[in-house]
Image 1: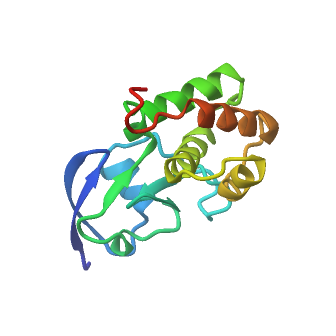
Image 2 (image 1 turned 30 degrees about the vertical axis):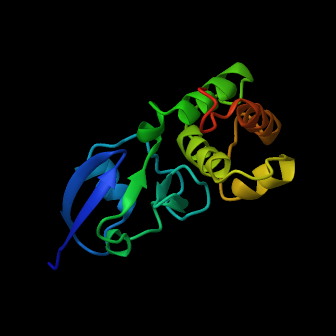
Length: 163
């Protein structure tokens, strides 16, 4: 079996990975690296539970082969957002407004929300819905999720503010 070697920084930690090039990034993260916050929902790219960021862009880890992630890439999973000011703001807003119930979709929602807010620019209901078009929530409904992201946008830490 052919394998590839990759050097990635995931959540600020350096990893050397050796795996089959067509193996899903989701499986490498969950099984090899034990980063189990990223969930597998549908396994077909329709639910968004497996959303992670690769070089700052949200991607579906169930659809991305490990060989497609370049050597030297910066990956961020939901675990990596836990200790960031923006990640805390999002988690608090989701909790405060009851935007999470079963929690299965929330890791992907949080990563997609973080990517949207990190980009800056207009954060209104339309932009939020567009940024989360690939994320499905069957329990909470989107009204509370949109409200939580709007609240997080108001509280979003910006450079130089001390937040």
